[in-house]
Amino acid sequence: MAKPPDLQICVLLLKQDDPRKCTAAKLAKFGFARALYTFRQIPRRSLLLNPIAPHALLPNDKNIPCLVAIDCSWEKASSQLSRVFPGFARKLPTLLAANPTNYAKKHKLSSAEALAAASFIIGYKDVAEKLLSLFKWGETFLTLNREPLEAYSSAKSEKELSEIETQFF
Image 1 (cartoon, rainbow, N blue to C red):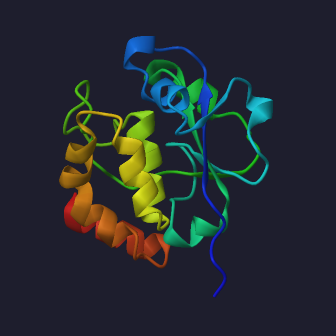
Image 2 (cartoon, rainbow, N blue to C red):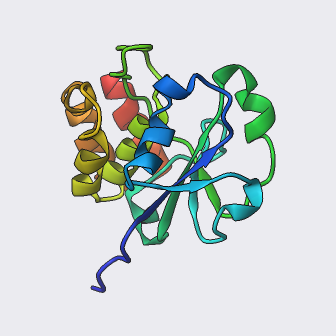
């Protein structure tokens, strides 16, 4: 079996939130992610994290070499995320946030948490840990979600993923 390509992490920074709390900007600042500033910069062969995507992220998505998070305000998200983007749009299964703003809330992940979760599910657990290492609450995210993440990373289909999600949430 061929080794999957190295995973490139990108963040589309739309600068709609408080810059002091922007996890995507912090990832870019410290070289953990490549900053993008326009939709045209999104690589064609990328896995785009989008909470309103029709399909869920599955472990077999690991062959897509670039993972992209769009960092935008939740209040403005639906208009931003309804656009057509290059790449493959995927939504994450249910997870709990560990960031101080949305602690223990379902589906309210920061960009860093979303990227880490996606990395973990597609088999890049070391990348997930590295991304979260920048944040005081990063280890808490993995602690809160370790069991669901492990289970999600073994799902073979969206149906199976949905069943796993129901077991935990």
